[in-house]
Amino acid sequence: MDAQIISGKEIAEEIRGELRGKVAYLKDKGIVPGLGVVLVGDDPASHVYVNNKIKACEELGLKSKAVILPAEVSEEELLKKVDELNADPEIHAFLVQLPLPKHIDENKVINRIDPHKDADAFHPFNVGRMLIGDPIFMPATPHGIQEMLIRSGHDPAGKHVVIIGRSNIVGKPVAAILMQKGQGANATVTVCHSRTANLAEIVRSGDIVVAAIGSPRFITKDMIKEGAVVIDVGTNRVEDATAKKGYRLVGDVDFENVKEVAAAITPVPGGVGPMTIVMLMKNAIAAAYKANNLQM
Image (tube, rainbow, N blue to C red; front, side):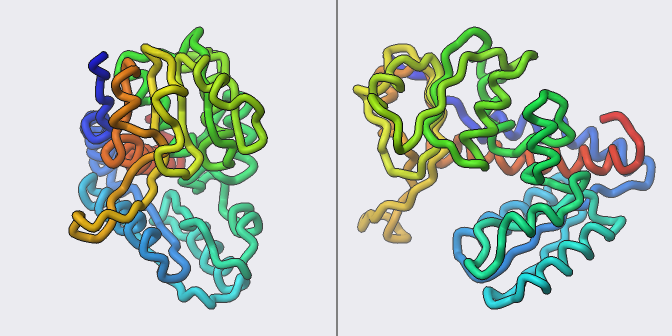
């Protein structure tokens, strides 16, 4: 079987085209959408993510504001920065890049963000709204996965979706989104995790498989039924002496072998990653519309 490669880059560019029109409408009214990003410490991967978000803002004509703090910053000082962004009228949405240093309570920081400026949609208020099917914002990666399925012709309605991973960032919200009533949802969802018995058997029953566990090439060919759609959320560095940087990125799925049985599969890189960024931009633009009582 020659699997369809679901390109997150191409779908993200399609969505960016739609968002450019939304930004132009705001600018005609004298409004420039603003996205803030708070980064604590010098984790190289986090710096890359933040730089990608700033670059995406520039490409779409959004104002961006990066707040870079040292790893030893106190929790009190970080919360003060969150309060400042909450009060900044030019910043319509913002996020605090996770993970945070161990001496800072992530939940306390997330709870301090104004839910109406919560670009990541991690605040309990937004999680609850999403769960009951009435979201203000959607978390970027799960929403991106839903858009990939819809726009690549793989409507999850009536399908059995198996999600491997139960994180608050991907696994749980993907399950909540895909089980809702409505377009791009109406799936029957199973969530697997580290304590799941008969994991391979359950994954094999999935019409759509979403891998989000952070373990390189964990999902193998024998775990995927023929004709399944496979969404690989994982981004793992593996050593590769032939690569320029000494490593390369691979997903949670054994891509080369799984694509032989799957009907469709996302690559790593170039799959879910670009979708996360563009859906974050969509949240920031939506926040600017809401702040000015406009319908997006």
